[in-house]
Image (tube, rainbow, N blue to C red; front, side):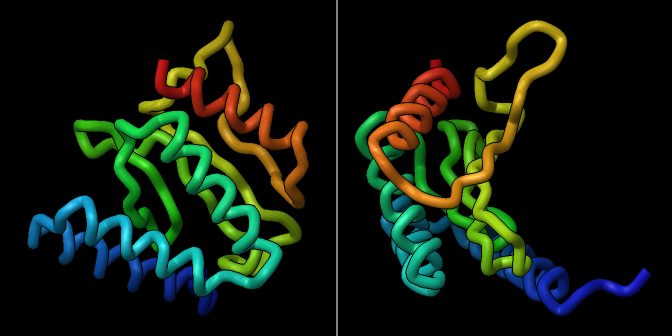
Length: 138
């Protein structure tokens, strides 16, 4: 099965991230990479990405910004990705996605959600995402 152009680009970004990781980038350099990714997004995705970035910095200042598979992401002190934002334009999807990885503490019962479609921003969305971030780092 052939890879799409978007998948090929994501693979290239991942390889570049791994090369940067071997160079031991500073947190400031990682932050700059994330801001660059955000600024390259389409206007609607960029607005959401900026809000998520600000929330993470406010609620979970212990998480470090980084790119992960070419996406805006945040990792713990062990370098494990806790959460990420995949803009709709990345894979020409219908909606952007806020996702959580294994390092997030969202476990509940035998099944729980690990990603959420985000198509806009208002006080209710901010409240829900804030609660998810707080739970993820608890």
